[in-house]
Amino acid sequence: MIGFGFSSKIYLRKAVVNIYDQISTNKRKTIVFMTIFLLLIIALGWMFSQIYDSPLILFLAIVLSLIQAYSSYFFGDKIALSISRAKLAEREKNKDIHRIVENLSITSGLPKPSIYIIEDQSPNAFATGRDPKHGSIAVTRGLLEILDKNELEGVIAHELSHIGNRDSLLMVVVVVLAGVVAIVSDLFFRIGFFGGFGDDDNSGGSGFGLIFGLVLAILAPIAAMLIQLAISRKREFMADATGALITRYPEGLARALKKISSYNRPLKFVNDATSMLYISNPRKKRSWLSALFDTHPPVEERIKALNAMAE
Image (tube, helix red, strand yellow):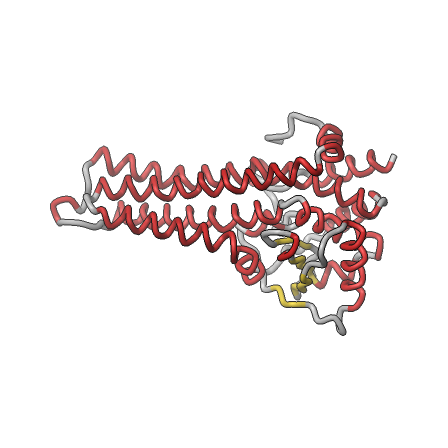
């Protein structure tokens, strides 16, 4: 498996020692990755503005990148919840989950996040929000039905760890901006084949410039995907370890991960962008090729690390 040169125990040891360092690191990464994605979009805009001799393209790319950067930071959590069709959990109808989240929030020293329910039988969960004061946790109906209390506490503690470590901010920013890069790249790719901006004499662009622009349009979303892979796999080990420290019961999360991964039915409403937010790959079916680009580390490795922590 690509990206697993280090053993899960090394990830676990780093997680326990550097939990607080991870918070400041994720804050810096958020700024860095927002900058990278902005530059990718602007680079695409600049290239095609040169090809079609139209400054309007560059202007639109800059405006779009700034709007999306702002939206991803302040509204990225709402976008992710909306895509997942998560609904706010009423306390009277979901007393148990509210009680568990409240108790673990007190234990972890975090504000209680908003709780959402996804009406889907496939067990899964994710956290989002730009900081602990704006945190949200979404769980599927299936998760509430198949996990016992200790297992559910393990999952909730894992998601609280994402909020506390600022993973939720970093990941939702990456999710939204990576989606924008893919959309913009596809738009420019279509422009390259079916027409362009500017005067008729320049609408096709120069041969070399057009080819270079199309290559850039293809490579940009690939670069965005590689950025997702670079930051998402390690964060799951970190959240597993931090969550286990909150509950003092690593076996609960280990059992939960085994049950979640054993359920073969995928989530109904999920896409490539939001799938990386979930505690376990929500698509379930994985070929050997898709596994190479999976945003989640193997469940077996995560369970092994949690069992080592228990020992």
